[in-house]
Image (tube, rainbow, N blue to C red; front, side, top):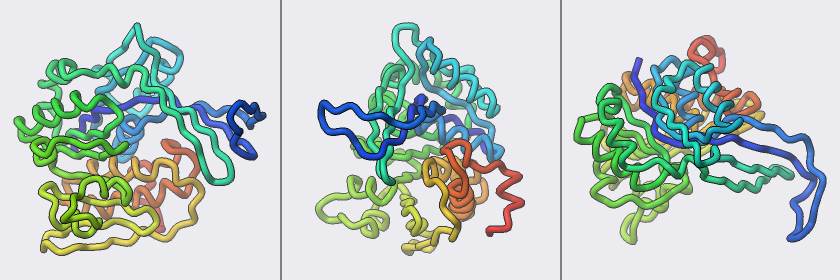
Length: 295
């Protein structure tokens, strides 16, 4: 099984439901407040660890109650926390989520996530060298991402980037990435005037792109250099939160099976994840994936 270093965000998610969203200046009564562990880096690390990968997390937390909760949650999922940075002068990041009638409003406070520096990445060079796959997202500072990609590339590591939230990277850095995992919205920002449809972007991108497409499945360029569509599995959806993060973590976990094998396993894992409530709570274990009768 692969050794994966996740360099990314750690958030406390604060969620509530309302009948409708408030107007400016208006106060409404909401439902119960639910506090859970989130952040794309955190979610993808947990997804890979539950599927059996050896996972190390490089991220930053504040010295506060949310930080304690997030740190203990990583340890509960057997994720190496030796390189989680504790910032005494910054709070842990939070995502404030309000839901109403299948829509949501989200405000993210970056907190400690925004303190990760290129120097922190340089200090982790030996850690990068010890791992097979470096998994990144874009909820940490851009200069830290760029430094991580450059160091990992020089060490001949597999670099997987989930470009969410989408922020442009310099071309000389993008070309160093082994696999890009955008969704159908994020991929458009990877195009240009000549290649501006998802299909064109996938077929003409220097780094291989695996585009997640929600209930439609995945689009990618196969080993025969042809555009291929793998449909999603048909399941009863309970909660789609975290399905994309489950796919990313599972893809890295199963890359030793080859790209197409990893994609198929990731589709299975994300399908299982939406049949249960909660982002991390819905993520399957390896035993659950292997014993499922859905596939």
